[in-house]
Length: 144
Length: 144
DNA sequence: GGCGAAAATGCTACTATGTTGCACAATCAT
DNA sequence: ATGATTGTGCAACATAGTAGCATTTTCGCC
Image (cartoon, rainbow over all chains, first blue to last red; front, side, top):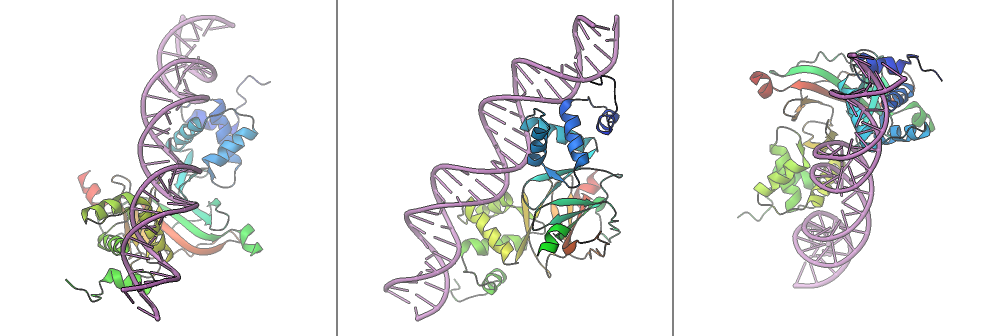
């Protein structure tokens, strides 16, 4: 078993934020990195179970909050009341999300430029823009 | 006291959807019409209390659901887990929302054209786009 | 390698938001 | 006015997220 710092992507990402390398954080981050779509707490928790990682619901909440605060991950609210989480792959969360109204999944569209040079009414200070596209994903779309 | 159908905007709007004119629906719709921003269940409930309208939490949920289904109102999920509701003033909900990160309020920016002629990766069927801008509203912005 | 401080975890309990089923009351057509 | 239909109100439930605190784990330091 390797006891040196094998420097997995997840570990170095955590260390870069000044956080401690713990089982839970590494596992959660690996799950997020491996996922192509945004995941809910539930889904991440299930993935942790699959990995055999002991965890707690509360710990998962706190871990995800920490990841979001550190800028590693980002959270978003879907149509249901469950927040979804994903890794902020490139740069800040300046990318769009696609929400499939049929299967409920949310994927990140990294290649999209929001182009939100919109004319704000006045007095509004724009910090960031979040673009959510609704429709059918390829999987659901071709089935219908 | 007027007993004919004085046709308040709220009443005619409800009747146009084939719904019955009830105290709760009229009151809720009036609150929504009077509000410049999106409201949560809590806020609407408080407004109903102010009006002296007896109501129930569940009734409020169902009334709002009905309004959304009828296309009169629209709901959206904010950063917190509370859904917010507003009237769909002009056309469908093809307008942007501004979310103030300081006071948490959400206003509708009707004058904005999302311009989401984005290049979807492939296989994705776009139904509608939701643009949420984050930042500081005029009230919070000038104070800082 | 061991030691101690600081941080993360895990547990229980709690709050908030939203939902379901059923009895009762209000609405609307006749 | 009368009766079917629809909306309301109540109670209980379900799910998502939070708070406090004791225990364990990580990590800097010797």
